[in-house]
Amino acid sequence: MTSAFHTLASKIPDSLTSVKDSRVSGFESRPSHSMAGKKETILIFCSHPDDAILGMGGTIAKYAKQGKQIIHTVFSCDSKHQWLLKKIYKPEDITQECVRASKALGISKTIFFDINDIALSKEIKKPWVHEKMLSLIKRYKPKQIYTHVTGEMRFKNHRNVHDAVLQAVHTVQYTGDILLFPLWSLDFRQKPMPKLVVDISQTIGQKFSVLQHFQSQKSSLLQLAPVVFCRNWKSALGTGFKYAEVFYKEQ
Ligand SMILES: [Zn+2]
Image 1 (spheres, rainbow, N blue to C red):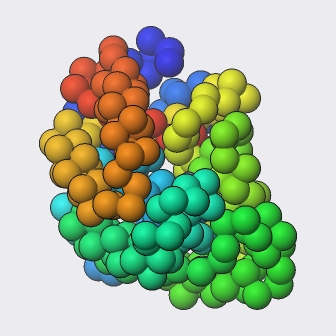
Image 2 (cartoon, rainbow, N blue to C red):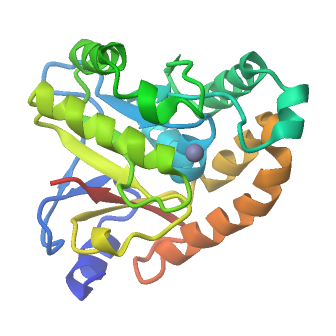
């Protein structure tokens, strides 16, 4: 982060701001309602049910408190990496966990694509998925779209969803902001991109509290949650915030 960013960020505490250029030289406030009084909508595309909460749960809770409509889409709800859990938890169980966690965070609506995680890399390229994504963008007219960064090294399906989102926004000639959140890997290619840093000091407790709804992911979350917590703390260093989530703006 640049010193210019530090200065600006600390001058705008507890406000949601959007970076305008790659040198982090400008911000603009984002009111929760448009001039016409219509509720501002954000649309989130994620691979898995807990991705959005881990990657941007504090921001989601903050948006919800600001009165924004949050639409959350999840591509896959099975657990291919956890063969034992797969015997205990069915996809519909994980779907219900996600619905409960999403509601607790203030998400307005969660939409499931119900694609098997193993088949996602192929299925996501099919026309029905593209058409469904287009229809969601056209229906909700989001001011911002959030999804995974392009360089997730651990989960290729995060990259697949990122690429599908870019294809969809290109098709509809979407003109709003596309913001990317990292989860498990830092992609150095993202560093020159404009950044949005959101102060989540008031909502980080809620973010980690709702994770308790994911009983099916309990063992992995016990390991991952502390990592995410440290990242939220580290992301706030030098900003004047206590905890923060960072997003990169797709150009
Ligand atoms: Zn994931």
